[in-house]
Amino acid sequence: MIDVLKKFDMDELLNCMHCGFCLPACPTFQQTGLETYSPRGRIALMKGVAESKLPIDEEFEHNMYACLGCRACETACPAGVKYGELIETAREVVEDTKKAAGRQSFGRRIVLKRLFMHPRRMKLTGRALWALQASGLQELASKTGLVQILPREMTEMQVAVDRVASPADRKKRTRVVKAEQRAPVARKVGLFTGCIMDVMFYETNQATARLLSKAGCDVVFVDQQQCCGALHAHSGEKADAKVLAKQNIEAFEALDLDVIVNNAGGCGAALKEYHHWLKDDPVWADRARNFVAKVRDISELLTTLPLQVTKTLNARVTYQDSCHLAHGQGVRKQPRDLIRSIPGVEYIEMENADGCCGSAGIYNITNFDMSMRVLDDKMNHVADAKASIVVTANPGCLLQMKKGIIRAGLEGRMEAVHIVDLLDRLV
Image (cartoon, rainbow, N blue to C red; front, side, top):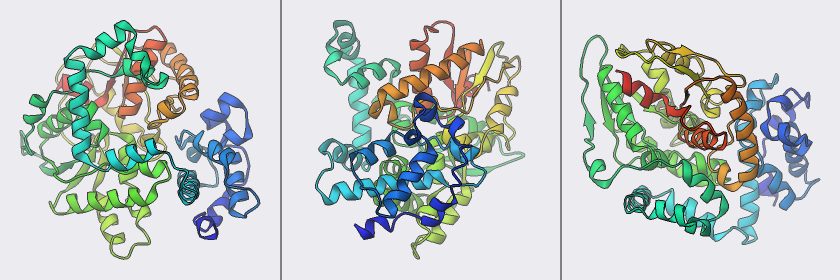
């Protein structure tokens, strides 16, 4: 137990001044008003556990996993407390304790260790989903009510899932997409495709390559790349997250790339933290820093390239920040600049645009009710913007916005679209 507790960074825990600036920024505190559902309260609980004054029990676990991990509190915190690292450590301590007691669930082990750590199995999952959709079984199950045999959370969220790419379409991908023009900028870009992203939003990855090609880049779909590890790090499985980080560093560093680009805010935040994850590893620390120095979100890169948006879009458009893009990476201006650069667009900034939508990785599955409460509040702001398009920059946010449009009765009046897909329509 002592070794487990040593994982807490006491200096970082003590940095929290308990001022309460984080409270208005925290979605779960806003929903409940409970101190234990706030960053300040959770840090107090962590400190109590680290000092052996509180047990690592089910109540502690519940309070740590009730957090969305949106990191809006980091933006609000005047002391610069690294809350994201603290909540990851707290969950790691919870999971280490459960492993020692043999209490980790079988389903969790299957998903985290047997699925997400194996790209081929993720691809097979994508094929199975396509077969389900193409055969009409998914639609039939929805119409007959058979879908109700699934857990309620999955039944609710499956309505927001679009048709995935077929195996035939996936075979058309070429490993390298050459630049359409060389002047004035030519760069060799490695595309981080992500695991869920490449299963459910394969076409967005293809669109990313097309945009970069038109902007003068050679784009490489890097073999041997893995899941970014964010899901594992956020779920207390930091050791597995580090394994995935090392595999990704090794896969990308062999190609002499100028830039490593991604189009998912959550993945990008994890990729940019590899040097923190591996800072104590003498073999990997420098390699991780070199890797991180090349990582860019797609909007960061596109705003530096001569991308020509040639078509007009006469529409009122608003933007929903990805938490891990805005709060985790500090990327706010570039996506908005790209949207404003589209001829004909009337851009409208929604209230609380950088507030969490409730997606938060798999939070909308594991904490469905709270996720929907957060989403419903977000959709009030989306509706008030009176836009016909809400743009996002993260696959989880995109699914959540699609679900939110259905819940808010805005179907037919509004669509949710990834920023890459929007630009791809217009260049």
